[in-house]
Image (tube, rainbow, N blue to C red; front, side):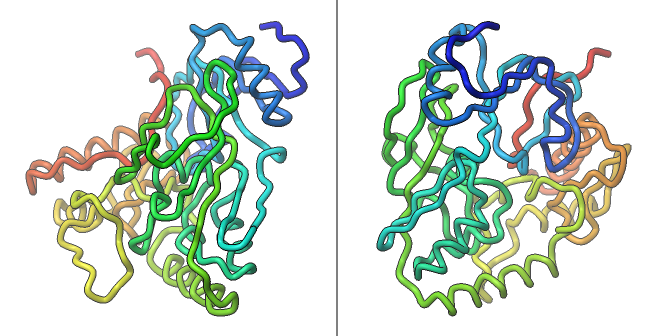
Length: 307
């Protein structure tokens, strides 16, 4: 591949396992790390339109299959992680970590506290309409800037994204480069105290020290936990997994966490096939037990190794 005037780093046959939280997966045909928005736009304009593009964040919600990915993976770095606050709006680069955005907003008295415990970066949070404690990105999203697959830089609205539970109508091959969010006003000290309490609750109930990718399956009822005392658990993914006897289930180096049964973990030496296969085992058992078909929340991409 030859490109004129590109300042970013293009690497052929780049292994992706080390870029994901689960530490599994084969190589991408190419990995491109753009220097800035203009560099990304120039690269996409020159890239053969037949070549697929996959934007990748910090790999917190992702299984890359063992055979790798026949595409150019776009990974945004330091040129895309700035965070600025003006009044009640926060504009963050797509590579900015959700936790950093929540903290910077709280410093300025803007309530984006629900982002504090969501793993990953703002780009992925927007794309998947991430949420917890009853709040979602859809509730605070104002607008975003993206680079289309054709290399055009443009704004995108909430109406265009069509936010739904854990999904959006994101344009194919486009790369989100920044998002503007609006939160309610709050007292910085109180906001930070709330986030600290959320962290302590998360660490007490989730395997935060294990190699996981966050929640494995969407809640069947189509909404996230609110954290409130009256929250109903009957149709939470972890509950139907427990009822099917799959807490702690394993395959190869993959395991459903004993601490939280909706967390798929690499317990040591797991392959992508182990992890995805165990997830499918869980889906089968849950369906047999309750008639509920669990939907993956973790994104799975790429090709399996040939048998």
